[in-house]
Image (cartoon, rainbow, N blue to C red):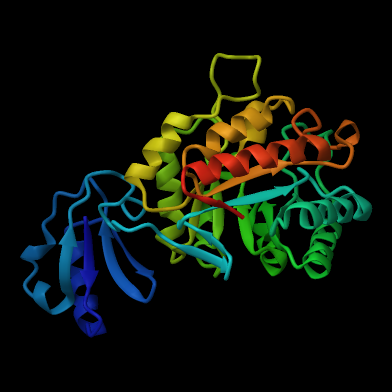
Length: 340
């Protein structure tokens, strides 16, 4: 249940309510979103707070939501959340935003060559690359970390691109937030609730990747965790889930992506690269994703994929990326969306 708190409420009244609610062991959280105040109770709560004597002094209205994710649903907000990165980069409207670049920052030449290719040939406005890489193997390349952040800042300045990059934990969240226009929470970090809470306190859009073993309920609860801590600008990312099929890296859950468009007001992007894990088929999956009228795509491309230090199997060469772009653009046009 979500209760809207009146703008002119008196703090003393709210303190008295809190004392009453706590005496009944009511589980709730007061949330501030877009300068509005809400009181959100757990979905399992049996307590009717309209019975509180001074209810009318504090609350305007209520929305009954039975799911354990409440702020991310269309029952709470019917219209799409529009997240504006710049005048021509919006998530949640009629654009499909292409976010492209290598999996990881490896060197200055690598990122600068990639950025130049993307900007000069396709006017791509969002550069993706990881400075901090949460790899499963402790022996794999873990990213350039602070040096990687410096190189992303150079890409941003020289090519006027927006940056999306990943945060592994709250220990380097501030460093990432200083350079990133969009902060990415990777699939392995979706359950780091302390970090989700920290991201809720940052004034930057958060792209939340679905864990590869997570249900939609768990995915949207993670989104709620960010929103409940004050940040309404959450972008959902479907990047493939683990199934019994071993020939692809993961299975892109297009069914869930379509369902999320119905049940959530948050923008939705898809990551064909991580789902497929095979560069030859990534463009085909990207075309299918574009047909869903999604808000964005995450695609990996590298100057020399065979030498990539991270995810070389799925990185597109520049030639592969070029062929893919023309087809994806045509598909976006056919479903009345603009690829930017």
